[in-house]
Every structure is written in C-alpha cells, then in structure tokens.
Length: 304
Ligand SMILES: Nc1ncnc2c1ncn2[C@@H]1O[C@H](COP(=O)(O)OP(=O)(O)OP(=O)(O)O)[C@@H](O)[C@H]1O
Ligand SMILES: [Mg+2]
Image (cartoon, rainbow, N blue to C red):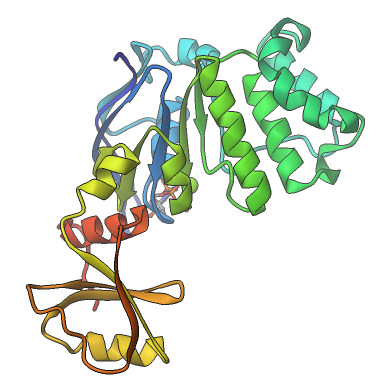
C-alpha cells in the first residue's frame, strides 16, 4: 500500500512563558484510501498536527508529505488537493446552505455543479433546507453542510479535526457512515476524535498523548496486543470497592468504567476480598488499551 500521508519526526513547540511541546517527534503514515483516526484527549496535539498537514502551521522539525508533496515547500498544491475541516468549522452563519456551498466552490475556483457527484449523497439530505441560514441549522445538519463545503473542490485527502465533537449520538453515527461512503469513492480520510468508541470505525488509528504517538495499528490489533487479563467487577458501592482495591498488593490497576470497575492483577493471585457481586473476564476496549499505553509511556506523569 502506498502512503498518501507521510509524517516523519514532526515536532512543534509553542514558545512563551511556559513553552508547550505540542508534538514530539511524531511519525505516522496513512495509506491510500484509508479511514484513519487520530485519537487522543484534550491538548494531545491533534489540532497542531492537522494544521501542519493542512499547511497552516509550520513544524519546527521533521517533514510532512501528502501525495508526495511537502507541506512546507508545496503548500499551494496541497491546498488544492486536500480538504481541511477545522474543529470549529467556519460556516458563514448568515449565508444560506446553498450560498455557503457556492462560496466554498468559488474560493476553489470551481462550481457546485461540476463536482456535484461527490457531494450528492450528503447534499440531498440538507437540500430541503437550502434556503435556510447556516446559523439556524441543527448541529448534525451543520456538520453535513461543512462536509459538503470541504468536498466541493473534490479533494483526494480529507483532514477532519474532531468533526463529531458536540454532535448528538445519532448524528455522530450518521457522520461516520458518510465517511465510510466517501472512502468507497477513493478519498483518504484522517479524522481526529476524543471519542474512543469511534476508534473501532477506523481502518487504523494512532493514539496520541502529550504530543507523542503511543501506538499506530488497527483497532483489532491494538486490542489483541493488550498484555494483561482484564476483569470487570462490581459491588454494592463501587467507590468503596475502588478504595479497597487500590490498597491491595495483588491489584496492578483498577478504575471506574461505567457501572463496573476494570481490574488488572499483578500476578496469579486474582482474589479481591469480600463484597464482590460480580467478576468476569472481559475483552479490553480501546480506552483500556489507551490507559495501559499511557501508563507505560515515559512522558506520563503518574499522579496516583
Ligand atoms: N497557539 C498556541 N499557543 C500556545 N500553546 C498552544 C497553542 N495551540 C495549542 N497549544 C498547546 O499545545 C498543546 C497541543 O494542543 P492541540 O490544540 O494541538 O491539541 P488537541 O489534541 O487538538 O487538543 P483539543 O482536544 O483541545 O483540541 C496543548 O497543550 C495546547 O494548550
Ligand atoms: Mg484540537
């Protein structure tokens, strides 16, 4: 497979009174036609990396290439072939749906008609509201319009920064289905998200924390590489149980996960004391993997 996006040892520091290392020698490759996820918490460095790829921010060191074009030297060409949707996508709130779309087509010196095939499936869903001002659309509809606007110049690569943040769960699902459809049309997509459940919708993901890539792999591989047996346990009072577990020598790690506690043991002693309602071995989620990898990372400050 060809890498269409190639990030090689990119670092970015924001100077100031308290300088921040936003990206620390980040490397990753996205293959042609892949739906790739960049998963990480607030401040992990997702936007910095995407702005560098979208040619809006200069890296301090390292190189980035999209379709063999350098993000610094060949920025004009990259802008023509790449669609970038920032976290807070700037639709023009006072323009109608169709006016917004026409505006973005004009910016790229093209027309809505000439590239209609690529946006058709998405646009027909918002077409009934084409005379409505963007500011009056629901969150889900805004996202659809925003996606149409970044697609209207027919980019081969889409860079989407947290496209589903703040969008209701049904619209989130719809949005990912649209991305799957776009992938079928041959578009390569890199999207960031803080939602771990969206990781499983990607072909491959990179987990990022404090400017460092913790791992890059398919969600299935990341889960299967989890090195421990993981248990879900429950008691009448999970908070008290958590306090108790954290004093036990044989418990390596325990944390609240929905209505359960997730527990990893140090060795073969898997006893938990009394008061346990339920204990079952489970498959780790991406979130469990993330927590394990964060703990392993030398950058991570252990506060417990
Ligand atoms: N212009 C800036 N000046 C100074 N520090 C910045 C600037 N932009 C980002 N940072 C810092 O760099 C780090 C990485 O930020 P970045 O926005 O890339 O992360 P992110 O993963 O997109 O986070 P978020 O979930 O908040 O969008 C953070 O610590 C952030 O506070
Ligand atoms: Mg961000």
